Every structure is written in C-alpha cells, then in structure tokens.
Length: 146
Image 1 (spheres, rainbow, N blue to C red):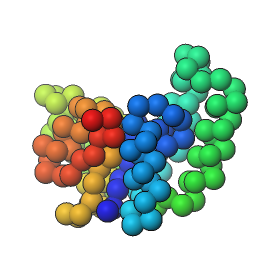
Image 2: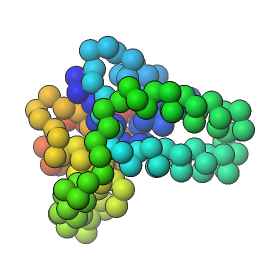
Image 3: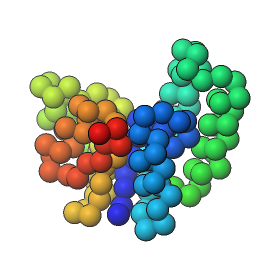
C-alpha cells in the first residue's frame, strides 16, 4: 500500500498511545510505501513539545521521540511544501472549510496527498473531521484509532 501520513497519526509511531500498534504495523510493513508532507517535521516537534508541557511525556521520552523521528525521517518519502500545495489547500478550504470544518494545517496535508494520490493510496490520520473530509472527496482513509 502507499500511505500518506498526517502528523496526527505519524506521532503515534514515536510515542506510545492509542493507535500506536496499528501505525507501527503500517510503517514497518516492507510492502508499504510511506509518504509525509515536509510540514510534518515541524508539526511533529510542536506536538511533542505540547505533550511535554502538558506533562504527558517526560524529558527522556521527549528526547527518545525526537531522536527516533530524526533517525526515521530519511526513510520516508517527503513531499515538499511548495506553492502548488498551498494553492490546493486554499481550494480545499473553500470547498470544505465553511461547512465541514477543514483547518489550515490539515488542508495542507490533504492538499499534498490529493496532488499525489492515485486509486491505491491511503490517507492515514487520527483526526475524525479530516478523515471524513478525505472520504467525502473520494479517497481511502485509515484511522489507526478506529
């Protein structure tokens, strides 16, 4: 399978929480190809620091998650955050922002996926709103928490 991970799902590979087992299975399956948006690197760090501030992870867990991510990052297919992605995200916000509640960063991930995806691609995310929007748009979705 070709899998495009939103940061909400990707973080589960580096920090044990609900959905970690499914995400780990998907990423470690040598038959799967893993894609992420370049933005995921920044968003990942932000998510970890938020977990640290909220005291759901400690210093050691934070360091392990960051070093693990930096180690694995080169093994992912990384789609650059370029103007065509931003323009597609704007189009998606116009289509799904008002009624469905699509948000900025989610729109960027979905835009990159939408520009790359073919029939055999899957969008992997935990955010139910985002998953519903991707499905509404006719794509395959995997939510590792359901």
